[in-house]
Image 1: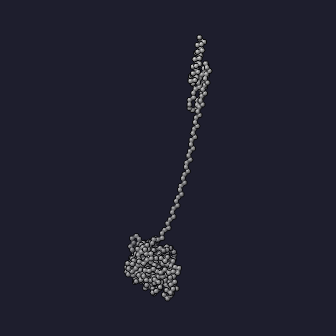
Image 2: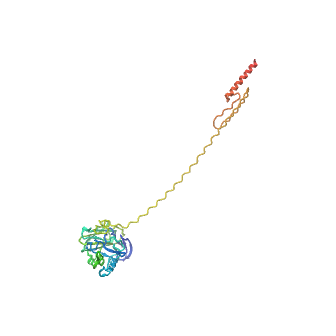
Length: 392
């Protein structure tokens, strides 16, 4: 095979890198997310000189009740306390949970680390009896076509009978494998086995009081699967069908197409898990989802439109000036007694309006007042009386 390939870690870390290994240049190595499945701590870790011991009921054997594993840093510290076999630093698990690629498998990243939170889950138990937990679990696989898929499981209390079903999108027929996983304490996988291999071997195991014991024959075993190469793998179900005890550690695949990040996995709840409240598989809950996409920023609200200026009100029309009222006509002076008075001048008519009185004439009744008439009558009477005197 070609040696350059990309590594895609999905779940606790999602990354892409180039390195040497058994996959071709176009292949992507996928660390399958299992956050919704793992629920226990099987490995003792150390931080700041303080050891966090593997959890009760979460060991690698004794149906989870006896013995766990430790990291290299824990073993180094315990050697100074005289708790290792022969008081030597022996073989233990890598401090960061990373196993370099080999000709048998790509780089593998398991879920324990000295730098991880001391409550973070590492493994999932499949107990001997169904009364302690489900005998089946399912891993949700990031959808893609895969050339290989690797599961990492240890079996104790004898070899484990496993039925492994690989499921595909689009109605493709599932691939079913029935396997007998070797006991981890007797050396794990046989040499050159086409299906089983040891991810790590040559380890001892540790009691709940951090005392190293037993022989250096303990392993974590890998199971190599060959999915249908042209079908999109979506999930893998593992069922234990006998009275063995198993611990699931993780899964890694080699994808041959673009990979869509998926969710973790599901499995029956167990009686000794870390934070085993149903949210992390305690009651068969779903796996944790992939990293959420970043939420887009809210759009900027557009500025309000400018209100148009009010139209200018037209100036009021100028009111026309009132017409000038015409002056009253002058009344003519009364005529002298005995003669006809001259006609008074006629008053000039006003420009607008009221009709002016005509000026009164000396003998003319038109335009005269009552006083004027009386004088005329009197004058006439006097004249008549004078004529009569002259006649007599």
